[in-house]
Length: 173
Image 1 (cartoon, rainbow, N blue to C red):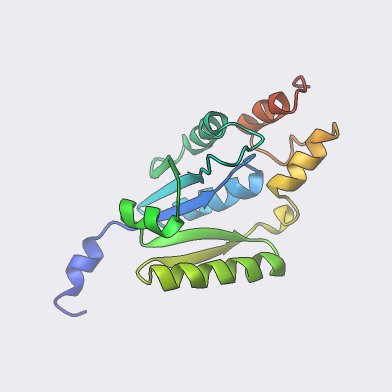
Image 2: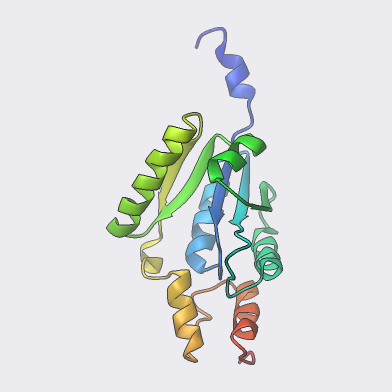
């Protein structure tokens, strides 16, 4: 190693795992828990667009994420508005963490990753493959199943189940 590499080695490795998490799924939990092992600090950031109304309120999503992340000491939960790369710069992140389920995910994420790299070449995009048992699980699928009375307990962390049912006007069963 060169003489100047020591300073780089001392830099905290901060990653950002961003999404709407509406609702958080077990696929998100898988990426979050595995991603926590890759960074000194992993920030799970809810992208908030005040013009869009999600199924779960921002406060509900924050509560779920904090509950899920409680056992991971290097994970913190936050909210951001605007461009993800601008948020990454503000928090000193060197990478954006993304999960990949399918080829369709890859095509979408590849384009977004290239745009992010163009805007912020100092911020890398890191992809983790989803657990094969969770390939079909998505927030939109969970919302669809739950909205028609289906049981979604096996697709979401325990902390997300009751808020999801309440948001749909269903009693917890």
